[in-house]
Length: 307
Image (cartoon, one colour):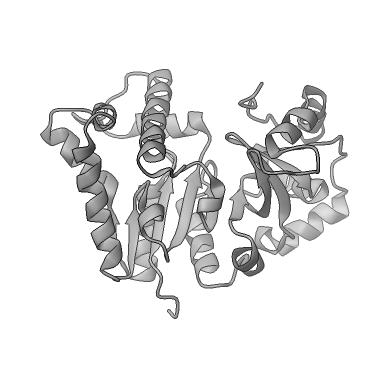
């Protein structure tokens, strides 16, 4: 393998980053380090849950300082690694940075299905979802306050991948192909991140008929990796297509788990001269457009966060 960069993986709680990082380390024959495991051990030693330790860390800088110094020292060592950590992208400046996302209900289901421990226990799906969100927000506030670093900003990463329906081996295969230059090379060189999105979670922005059967078959025969990347806007946790409705329709009809895309704008970045990514979402992802897309494709999109 000619690429000597480390690969650092962060992501939503329940996104499967531990599973992906373990499989990736095996695939690339690299040592894996999990900062989450270290953090859970610290919580257990203090008789706390992981969320309680996160909240305590907002008041006690010593906790973050110890973990962050450890990550910084590991990064400076120069060893090529697979690192499972929600802040490693900040410390490993030259690493290949991967961010995993997943639908919140699916993340909660995964966490709820794990064996219970003294550190993390949830009684219901709603409790798991609520506490996972609280823990994530606690971490985000700390990272913003301490470093001015927003873990939700997509441009911090080289690759953003949706793990909602994709199998871990699919995700690992695509990470390896991107890491070794076989997937999304132009996007990664010119304007990262490369997005690998679940087409069932991408919103349309205009009325669009389903792609015709001949094109659907052509796309299906070529496979998801051969699809011309969609052009995507990002608003909060939601993704929407600016250019590529026909290709998105074909991906949905072929039941692809992941499709390649490039990020046009996120948050307050401009999509047009007058509309930011957030404003464009509000203006174009309307109930009428979404409902028509759902009827045409016989699917149900998640409820947008801004609805």
